[in-house]
Image (cartoon, rainbow, N blue to C red; front, side):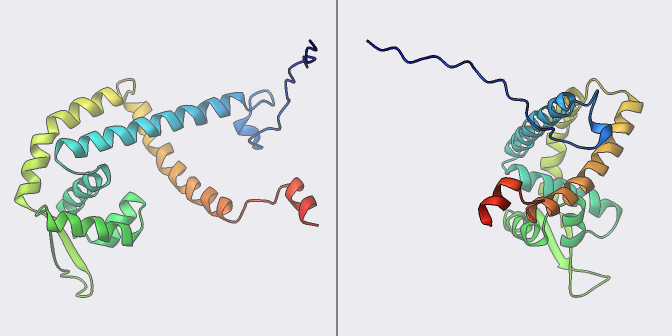
Length: 191
């Protein structure tokens, strides 16, 4: 019986996944990658929490987020599809589709805008206020637990960083949509 020769495992030295000096410690990207993995894990858990929040009131996670955003935005000024989409970093067609479902469910009221007759003003109905009021104690408990390790300074820092990261992510998505840079291997194969 011939035994296959065992080859030693190759421990690859992969190229860095980030190039900015600020993202590397000692020329290594290990902490950067760990942070990305933590953010991905947090994002997944945050999405699941949002789905459960929506489920508590019979909505999907995105519908819940849009509903509560309309409630808060319309309390300060006129809220329309554009302002809700901008606030949530979502596309207007997506927000329009979700708003139409919320209108059909009797949770959102659409009316002609006082400022611009071509657009609509969105407000929540009494039924929506009742649902959100009933949900508030659960929301507080979950949000307090979600951010339990943050003091005032850390919370303020995180809020500012999160806002800037959303902007940076939009820019990175544009770059990714362009293919960033063609890999040397793909360029060689194409020539």
